[in-house]
Length: 164
Figure 1 (tube, rainbow, N blue to C red):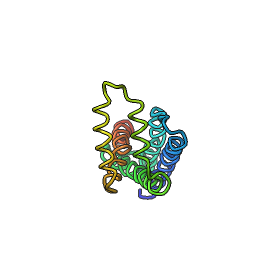
Figure 2 (tube, one colour):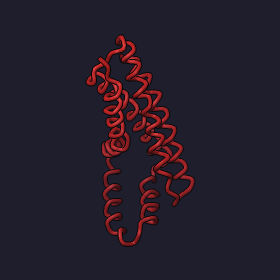
Figure 3 (spheres, rainbow, N blue to C red):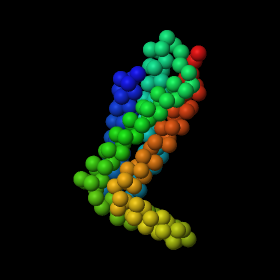
Figure 4 (tube, helix red, strand yellow):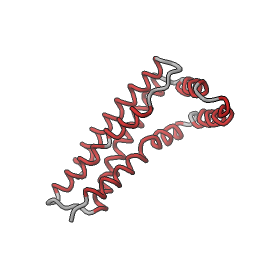
């Protein structure tokens, strides 16, 4: 089971890390242009396909049966590995290649915000800048980008792949 979780988690994590890295470097090289969030979200979903593969592999090693609970926890563990690789990749990029990310990101967001929403968005961005001063908050915020989607995919996959 552990081999299945790590193998699928690392595979999905590599996909998520490559996509995130390419989008971040696109943003760094094209200041002011916001990367396409639909592409990022779709690629995260693609990375989480490894959850489905992992649950199917777990089911096949268990004589074709798997309970909802076991399928869900297998998916959660794979999702956690994927998310951890994503977070670690972001930390390497942020601290080594893009330490002024929050400045560039805030400029881009403020530039692309309609004037009637500018005051609210400025408050949000300033809060994020404060959070980004603490490495634990960077880790937490980065997990919040990807892990909830992994939980949702794990839940849906467990519902469809459970078999008694």
